[in-house]
Image (cartoon, rainbow, N blue to C red):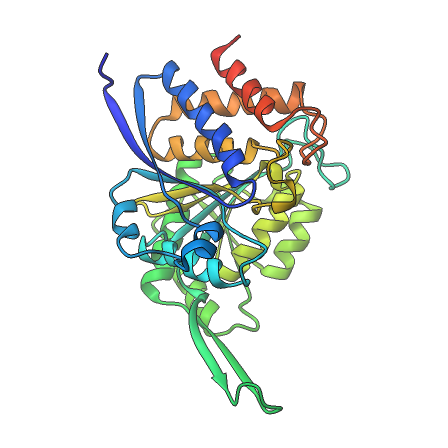
Length: 357
């Protein structure tokens, strides 16, 4: 039987526990394709710390071109204790974002029923928002350098690069996303206009100029420090937040904690007109490697996000419903070794609920 739609998916299992959670994510993907009228072709790419230690290569020639020919990328986790910090992060993760022009980092912050939050008095109805983070500019663009390095008079300069083009396309994406999300129709710009008076003057001007095209969207502004406070005190105030690269990096980790931890947090690096990459937010957790105790739900949620992005909303809905059931009915905790189930068993539970068994 020939399927109507077939998607070519690049898979980067990564390091540490990355291959373990990706294995369960792929298992889920195959199960859901059996319930829907589409198919996937998976191609694995050997990238990460293990490859770097073995060959000295971080991102070999021709890999980006191959990745660019796929419909989406599923990433496990990159990070190895024997590789100096910065080599893989800059040479692989950031380089992929830049070369594939994945200019949006999309991070849903959802507290599912049955999951504990450290926020007193808050429940699933209060924590349900999305952070849209600019993903290719700002302080992560790599502009800067050293003067008199290694001397007592050393100077280190790191510059934040913000272009009108880059800021506007991020903000425009956020408005469109807020419109499609159709929840509270409220978009908050998170910045620091009182101190970063050049970069966020640009962000603020573009934000309110673009807002004129979206009269149905309520606009709001908050300094990044205030945003952190309100995420803890009144997370229900937020619907969609748009912000720059650095601030987005920080507040999404706070978001992961208030939604119950890294074990459930997934994100996407989005190129709306090209190939996008989806991943669990947690690291490679090398100390748990091979123990079959790591939580795979974030990787499975990354598959859900990937299918939503590809337009397979019914399949994505099946996965989300299965995740909700596992969290509400089965797992004792999201933490590795405390779930009450092994990694593979959690994947089996998700599959069971997708099948309706």
